[in-house]
Amino acid sequence: MIFKNFKNLQKIKESKNNFHSRFEFYVFTAIILILIFFTYQRNLVWQDGINLWQDVVKKSPKKPRAHNNLGMAYLMADEIEKAIKEFNMAIYLDPKDYRGYNNLGLVYIVLRKFDDAIAAFKAAIKIEPVFFTGRSNLGRVYLDIGNNPEAIREFEIALNLKPDDPFIYNNLGLAYIGLGRFDEARVAFKNAIRIWPDYVEAQKNLENLTHKANSSRNVY
Image (tube, rainbow, N blue to C red; front, side, top):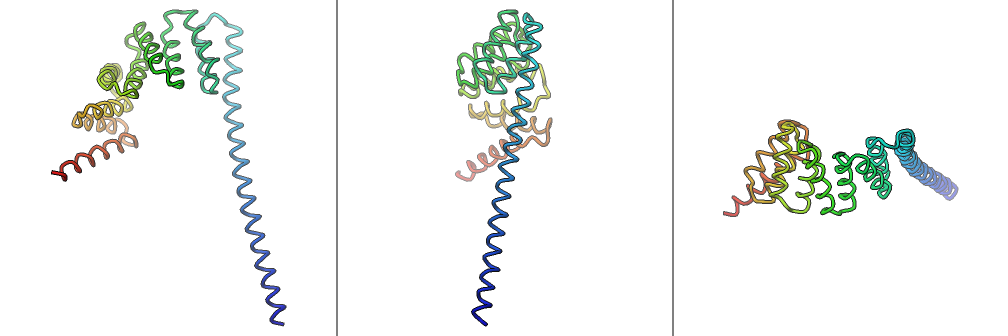
């Protein structure tokens, strides 16, 4: 009798284990299917953008804006060579198309060709000196390669054009840190947070800077 009850308990335990195993398998399968679905949906969105602007280019092949937008659609879909071709076509159609140069600079950043990116952004702001996005992008490239003085110069010009941009203040703070100008960096981060109180990156940068300053005082 005891042996029979033991066998029944074993069957119940095995049944539970099988249930949990099947449940975990179904959950895992469901997660994979959801990820595949969203990847497919994202690709559809990108493909829709490409199809849309391919149609516009086909109907208006001499409009730089159409080539720029098609290039951006290609860039978002990670079709880099096609993006470069469209941006170059936009510039060919209108040599004063500063947005085309800016977009070309974005491609070079993706390719980590920073010298080419700098040249492209400089070409954009030479055509349109008050082009905020071009100034911001140029400053960001300088920051990434460690040329902090030039980064600060571009960010300050950008802030004159758009004084309420929290991202520029945050980047400016990072450039100040690169030069050891911590008080100015603190002010920049605080300005970023003042404009956008929920700006997490600026909050973390300010916290790290404060922690670093406190640690330095404790050493002495």
